[in-house]
Length: 166
Image (cartoon, rainbow, N blue to C red):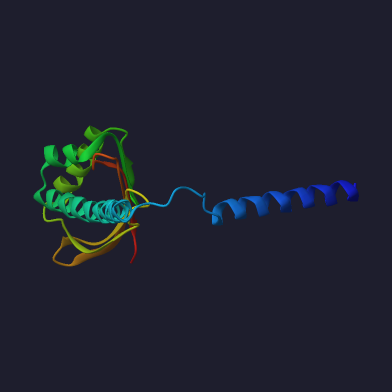
């Protein structure tokens, strides 16, 4: 049995070494011309900054619409299949359900509005961001909340998970 364990351990080490080697090595290919290098760098930079900027702009727009208390707009910002959940419940699986749930909040607390504190993105690694917000319920009640918002490729919300942070 111990001989089998030694063999499996050596095989695992060899596999891990190969994986590490593949991850750190570069494939040899014809060098890029200076123009190709500049084009590639520009495209990569543009792609990274565009996604981060889009997540920020989309999130700011989302909360502007939320503060307008407009059901049709909030529905339009969510993908057809969409979920919203917070400490109090969940709404979905459609954008109609999500909009209806948010409308219920607006009806129950007509003065409620949101202030965006800051928005964190992962750059070009995903379409997800975290928005730290203040939910101003009324003159005496404010909640600190972190929203984790996931967008689809067309910029619509597919999931919003809200967490109280105070």
